[in-house]
Length: 136
Image 1 (tube, rainbow, N blue to C red):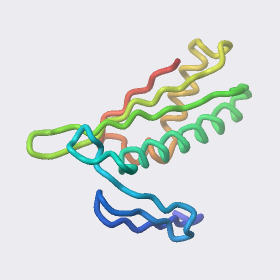
Image 2 (image 1 turned 180 degrees about the vertical axis):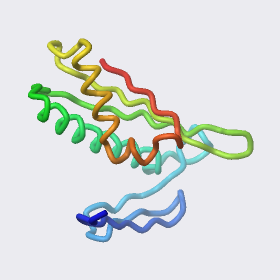
Image 3 (image 1 turned 45 degrees about the vertical axis):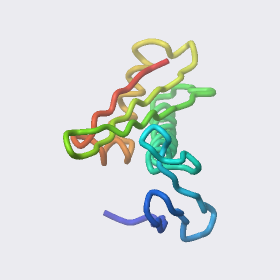
Image 4 (image 1 turned 120 degrees about the vertical axis):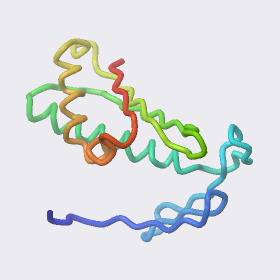
């Protein structure tokens, strides 16, 4: 494996701050109201959703390009849920891919499935958390 680059961020708790090493991201963290927090800041699940949706969109573009497909204004939404698993917590993801009308078919579904095989986030989470793919 050859490292292309490394991103770094430092966080202090779920009620503190998270700051990237380059200073571009400096976020206040807060527990969501749904779990008893103030909701007055972002949370790790939102950050994971942003990263996963961006990574998946990039993988989808690469797969489409390799297959000669035009995605146009395709968007990917990642719904990341925090779940209770007995005494522990876990997450699950639903990736909602909005494809152009011309790709609302088997080809479009195939592109999404292929992207799920190559996306680094999908590869990292495979077998660890439930990920559902939805083509919209």
